[in-house]
Image (cartoon, helix red, strand yellow):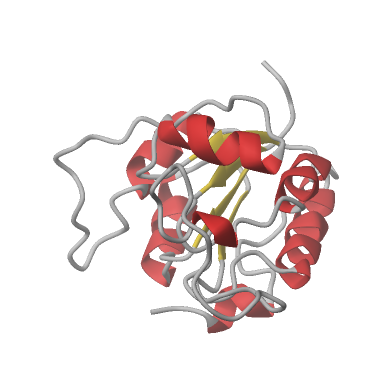
Length: 181
């Protein structure tokens, strides 16, 4: 087993923002062979940025293995492991997000970062109560996708989590504290 932290990646929102990225030409994009209407919003620079974080990248998305077929090649990423989410557990109600328990189980006590646009304090509390290792649940603005600020905050947390005497807080960043539902 490796000591590298896990980095769980959601696709819709963090990697494919819901608004056009700055500098996107006006008008409709050319049709994409994948048929996905927003896939042109992927930023190929996200692949090298994610790899530079130094963690073990894992898809944590409803795209499941389709992320390896359509997203990874466009970002220059290798085939990544995928968190298996049960089909019958897609509602959260007032509890934690439906991805939270499978992600904790997949982490198996290892330090992890979870990049998603649907994270709340309920998820952070759940992870703090049931995950024995350090974890950063970093909420990404779904309209912007991953930004330089997100990468800086995750990098700072990863640097802290690598120091054996420091237990980084899951509430490290202002972005994570202010972007809750």
